[in-house]
Length: 362
Image (cartoon, rainbow, N blue to C red; front, side, top):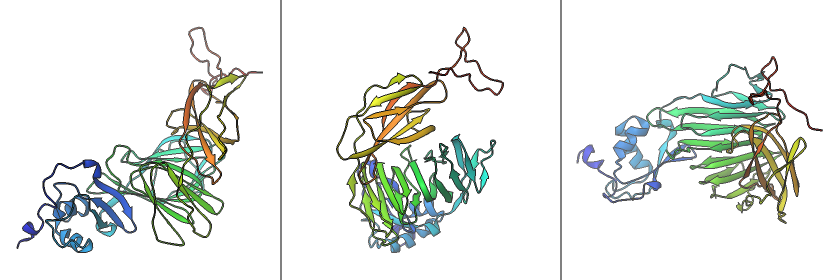
């Protein structure tokens, strides 16, 4: 029997839900591909490894005895060592405050960051990065990360990214265009969270780490055990300093707040009290997605206050934090920033440095 015959279609020609599909992230040293109708081992091998003859290796690795009867939906493991990649810079889409890269202040003319770069954000300082597949990475204030791996697949429109989080937070929206996930992992000193098509947050606080999945799902492993813990959408888990995973817990609901009102130079809202909620994270951004943060702070409520140092439309994003330290989805409201001096036609008056002249409230 020829190789061409052996590499016939996997499964039969059925109408099948394509949401089962295709690139599904990483597991250990392997990329995971979920089989769909019409796939062949040789085509999969060619797409991801660049060598169609690697079909036989995939057959052996995945214990496929009959290439004509591989179920649609089966997860195929493809070793990353077989997948050719190239360096892929991350684009800077938002920056605010004091940010250091490799121990030096981030240059004003810098537009990208690269594999190996170490990033440190200062107090009230924020950075947002975009990848080639339109995935985004938000680095909030007082966070320390290293772009341990920043690459893209040569033969498929997928990225291969590993973020080492030493301290603070990272938030990500991975593969927002539903193209599937190559590899996106966040490593902390005590855990590894691997994304399987997800809106994900990971926080390193003291000796513990916290993983929260807003959409999709993730797999969590620790320094104490390679056993995978599945985290579905709207759930989270904490990992202690000794690598022990807490129970996978339902995240808090988005808080119920009143319509924000202006009081002098700041705004306030009332949040509906919930017994298991310990505090609230209050963030101000220039966009409702929170990718252009300008401030954040923690309050206990029931009155939450916030403001903006610049004029124009702003958004407040408020999330509840439970007793375990896990936080849920944001409640978002719009508000107007600081008052600015304007001319008769409504145009803001600026200083010689281009900054708007603000009107102070007393």
